[in-house]
Amino acid sequence: MKAVVVVMDQLDERLSCIISQVYDSVQIIGCDEDIVSLIYMDPPDIIIVDRSYLLKYDNTIVREFRTNTIYGHLPIVSLYSADDLSNVSWQDMPVDDFIITTDTEAVIRARLDFISQRTKRDLDTNPLTRLPGNESIIRYIQHMFDEGLEVAIAWVDIDNFKPYNDRYGFSRGDEVLLATSRIITNAVKEIKQESSFVGHVGGDDFVFICPTGNIRQLCEDIISRFDMVIRNFYNDEDLELGGIVSRSRSGETKNFPVMSISVAVVMNEDKRYSHYGHASQEATEIKRHVKAIEGSNYMIDRRGKKR
Image 1 (cartoon, rainbow, N blue to C red):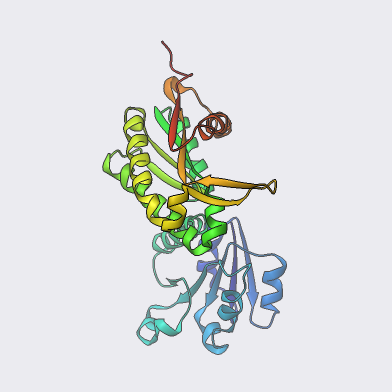
Image 2: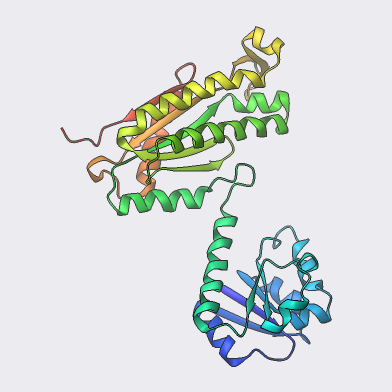
């Protein structure tokens, strides 16, 4: 990871050493340089700013990056002395975190590590459902494989979601996604297993992970709850017709039934998988089969189970 440190004069040698130990690359920029251009030319993973610079230039650098749609996610951390804290108005200081320069080396390192890890999590969190995103899903599944744990990985897809979105609008579609995420999350929470996990790949695709012994009941519970709730998102006219009459991607008029869900499950039994890509590929094949079946269904692949 790369850090940019913006200072009024020069960075304290002790602090410079600590920051260099945490980040792979550190660029120090003085107040007399073109800070914004330098950062845009080689964007860092974190911006650390001396409090005295923020005060002198009225937080202009913070506003610059906060209003930028590409780099607005960059965490901005301010450097404070212990004496500064009594005079800080946090409502007027739009930074993400702060470091007390007089803290011990261990404390400063720990806070920088914490800020970096939190930033990684925030960047890979789905903005709608607040569930872990694709990178977190891949890391978690790969960790399960590396540990040789016997878990079931289920990919969940909402059938006929696009026609619903086209007819009812994106805000109603978002409500469906939120409801689905709650259904899956609540069902997984209820089994109270430490190795369980729920993620949002994106769009109408979700993933959940649980011990192999829980997967069948979980699939049935999730499908039952989804089918019970989903009809509430349609108006009476569409329910009477059994779904939505709309144009397919090929341009032909078609009746799209009420949304359902398809769940494709692969089982890491007897250490079947060593890589995420293998599991994902087999799940895609299973999903193709299960989506061809009318209504909400699940399919569990047990090809790796030794008899």
